[in-house]
Image (cartoon, rainbow over all chains, first blue to last red; front, side):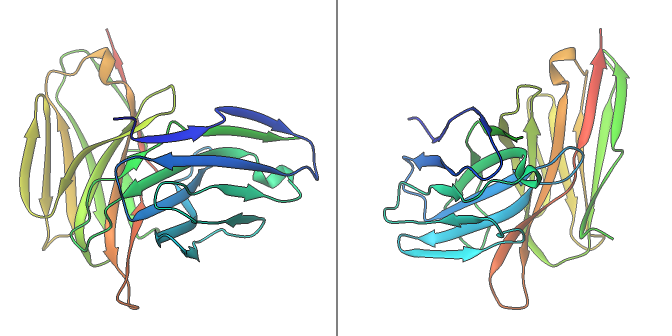
Length: 114
Length: 112
């Protein structure tokens, strides 16, 4: 059981470049999330999805886009990368019921924009 | 003021010590999670609790719903416990939906 698989682990982008962070889960979770973690800060929600075909903005969505064409996959697209997007990105998934089922995280992507 | 506050931010302990990490929240929740983030960066879920106490090995998590407070205890701490511990509230929003709200984490270092 792979859980949440996130790629790549590291990436360096030049300002203005674009890239897609991949995330896939094999637990049939409805809810999927993208978070960013800046040094000394808590996890900030970028986008989330409650099921295939449904996405919604989180706290810090500017500069990012997502899609959810299948239950398993939830890619995060960075358009026109900026230094402010230098961060560690985590994909996560859960059943999302009202009782708060456990969160499962990918291993993270360390992104540097220079 | 953050809706989920953790204390202390940093903690250094000697091997064998009893450790307590605190989490206070100001929102309505249906569950509270404790997460562990190792120096390599991976995040794993330790506990999810909505009342009382849970125990797993040397780790104990408690929650007091009335006081909006949770604690994570580590008994007989070991250097391998060195990590960042994060509490996350599964919070009910005014819209009727739920979201995770994270504390900023407690960085624990256990010295041999």
